[in-house]
Image 1 (cartoon, rainbow, N blue to C red):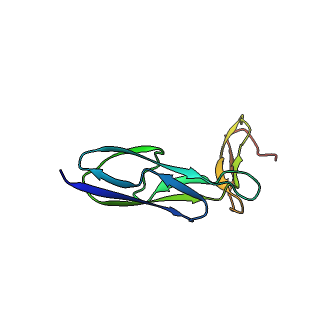
Image 2: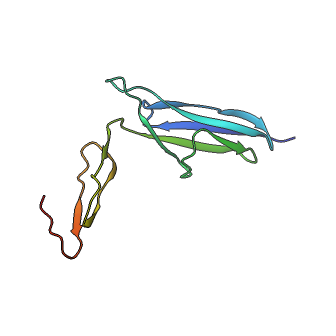
Length: 117
């Protein structure tokens, strides 16, 4: 039976490491996983995605060819922007953002209401 190699990389290389790289027989089910290192403040970096745009982690691969994947991590300084429940209108802009990101928040009043702050 044929054997294939799974190569796993990390970007940035200091943000984490991967498990599951190696040589496997064809049609083997192999679990790979990207694990985060800690930043200087002791917070883990954030796994973002694999280079094939899959965001599942860990994930299982069916080995059918040589494969190289990169695990992408982001800075651990991710902030959550919450917007209080609104009455008389809608808001946009809530979500998670990396530190330093400029975010636009929009408040749109319904007819008969006025935005007041």
